[in-house]
Amino acid sequence: MEKLGERGTVPVDLRGAAVSVLSVTAKREDELDESSPQKTNRQNTPLWVVETLIDYSNQETKSMKVTVAAPIAPNLTKYAQIHFEGLEVGPWASGKKRGLYWVATSVQPVKSGAQEA
Image (cartoon, rainbow, N blue to C red):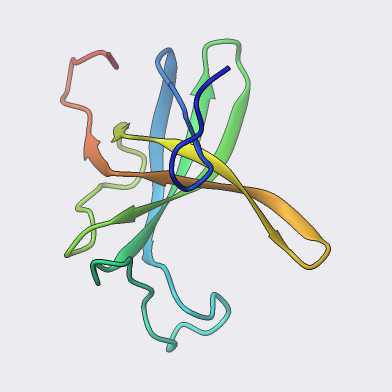
């Protein structure tokens, strides 16, 4: 079993999966209001949501939204393959609602011809 991080998260290894960008958007205080302020982390760095498509080698495909802190929006092309550094998942709860949240320390495009390490 993986050791929990300080946020109650566990590391995630996506080796063997193709991870593609669907969109990059500012993480908002009110997710339903595009004019609401952008969320920041404790260091006051803006938070960004990278919506992805994960294509596993077993022909299963899933989407997930990963939060990344960065001074400016990650420069990612739609459908380009990407790699997350420090990818982790953790539980969240709000009243009766429960789910998982995904965070990463950074995200970069995969160089052409490079294999996910």
